[in-house]
Length: 257
Ligand code: BTN
Image (cartoon, rainbow, N blue to C red; front, side, top):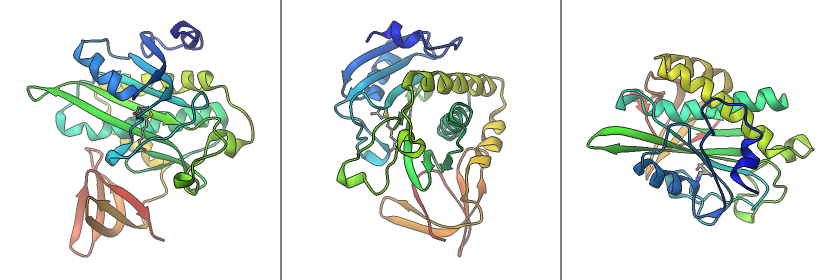
């Protein structure tokens, strides 16, 4: 497999026009961060068949069987205020959810900030990493892992993980799906560049079930309990707690009711 084989599936204008395929890499996010420093163009995609040190949020690992799933990072250079960086994670989740709905006629659920679930189980994780130089944003690496055709999961994630093939009962062409995802990412990226950042928040809300529910958010050793109310303009989650309304910008959410 070569970069051009994957590119032959793509109908995007910008995203993936520069595409780097690696059969094995430590982490596509790590590779993409190095490329940002070298000044690659916005829309560059780094995609791997296998990661030896795939990373998740909160310093976790991302485990994925080689050759079955989608493991890629997209480099973008959005012109947004530093305070709105949080919306980029939501942006990627929204784009993947829309792409899956369009390609496969199933509607995933978005769990704040950026997990995608099918029937309570996670099939997609997103790790966005913003790169600053002298306090200026030089780019964001949006790392996406989608469990596409993996059928068996290691013990430690078996209860919580699923894949598209497991849920749909049929094999899915990874690169056709990649094309749907990159097209949606390009579409919403253009919206962001035109200043319509609120659109991301407005549309993301259609894919979640958490509002009005009792939730618990774990941040390091702290735990916040309350009712999920809405999203803030910067992508933060507003919770009604015993101490009043609070906004959280990161953490792990559990829905309690
Ligand atoms: C999470 O849910 O914790 C985020 C998981 C993100 C995994 C993807 S796979 C491609 C990219 N490279 C990485 O090392 N991580 C992201």
